[in-house]
Length: 259
Length: 263
Image 1 (cartoon, chains in turn red, brown):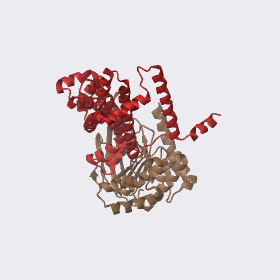
Image 2 (cartoon, rainbow over the protein chains, first blue to last red):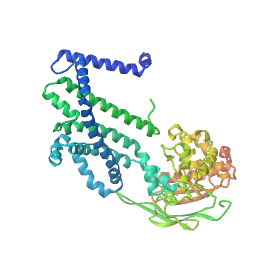
Image 3 (cartoon, one colour):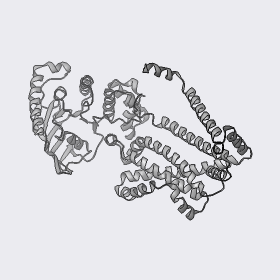
Image 4 (cartoon, each protein chain N blue to C red):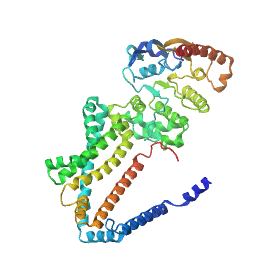
C-alpha cells in the first residue's frame, strides 16, 4: 500500500511540485493579506511597488549596493579564510593562539559589534563590508579548518610513497581533498553574509536593501518592506544555486549514500 | 633458500620502535632483524599488535625506528623513496582522480611525458584487467577493483620493493582468492621483492617463499618458515598435503600467540 502511494507521488515531476509549492505559498500570502491587511500587503501591491521602484530606477541602486557589500565582504573573507585555516591545521602554536578568539567572536551576534565598527570606520561602505567580512570569515575558517584537519592521512602517505614532496602534497592532495569543505564553507559564508548585511545596513547609510526596508517601515509602506524581504530571499536562493552548481562540478567524485 | 637471487635487498637490523602512550612507553618492536633477498616474496603473519604494520611503515620510510636501522641495497632508509612502493589495506586511491589519473600520479611527479605516462598506465591497467575503467572514478569501483588500481599504481612507478599492508584484508573471500592468484601471476611475470603483511595463514603460504611469524607485546620475530612448494602456485595448491602440513605448523604457532595476547 505504502509502495503504491510512493509510485504515485514519484510520477509527479519536480517542476509540478515547485508549482504546487509556489501556489500554496501564494494562497497563504493572500490569506494573510486578507486577514491582516495592515501588516501584509497583497501580491498585487508588492508587484506594483516593484514596478514603481524599477521605473524610477531606485531598486537597482539598492540591490547593487547590497550585493556589492555582500560579495566584497564575502569574497575577502573567503580568500583570507583558506590560508588561515591551513595555518591552523598545520601549525599548532598558531591554532592555539587564534582558535579561542575565533570561537569567542563567532558566537557574538554581528549586530552587537556593528556599532563599534561604525564608530571606528564611519557609516560608509567600509564599515558594512568589514562587518560582513568578520562574520563570514569566522564561519568559513572553522569549516575549512575542520576539512583540512580531516584529510585522510593514508592519502598523504600514499602520495609521499609515490614521490610527493610537501608542495605536491599541498596542491595535489590537501587542496582537492578539502574542496568539499571549502564549498560547504562558501555556502555557510554566503548565507551569513546576507544575514549580516541587515545588521550592517540598519545602522545607517542611504542605499541598500536593508536601508530600503528600514526606511519603508518608518513610513509604514508595508508593500516595500515585503518587497525587500522577498528580494533578499531571491538573492539567497541564487547564491545557493551557484554553490550547488560548483559542488556538482568540483566534488562529484565524492562517495555519497545512494538512495 | 630464498629468491632466485640470493643478494640481500632489504636488511632489517635490530629495529626497535617505542611509542609514547598515556600508559607510558609501549614497545611495538623489540629488536627485529631479518634479511629479504632480491625478488623474494616474504609474508609476515602475527596477531594484531605484533607491530607488523609498524615494521612495514619503517621499511617504507613513513616511520622512523627508535633504534636500529633498515637498509635497502646497503643504503640506509631515510624517508619514503620511489624504489619502495606501498599498497595499503584501505586502497588509498585519490577519490577526485579517475583510475588512469591515479595510476599516473607517481609518474607525473617523476616528470615523465604525457605519452610515456599514458603508455605505462595502459600497460598496468591491462595487467590488472581494468582498461575499460580508465575514465571511471574510484567511487564507481568495487573494493577488489579499487585494490587492483592501487596495485597498478604501485607497479607503474616501477619500485624494486613492494610493501603490502594487508592489501586483501578488507575484501570478501572470493575476491581475495582471485586477487591472490592475480598477484602471483603478476609477480612471476615481473619479479619484485615483496613484503606482504597478512593475518591469513593460507594467504601467506600460497604467496610466499618464506613466512615470518611475529609475536606480540613486544613485537619480535618468533620463527621464519621456508615454504618449499614450487611455483606456479594456484588455488589448487591449497589441497596439497605439504600445504596442509605447513598450514598446521604455522597456524599452531600463530595460535599460541593469539592465546598469549589474550592473557
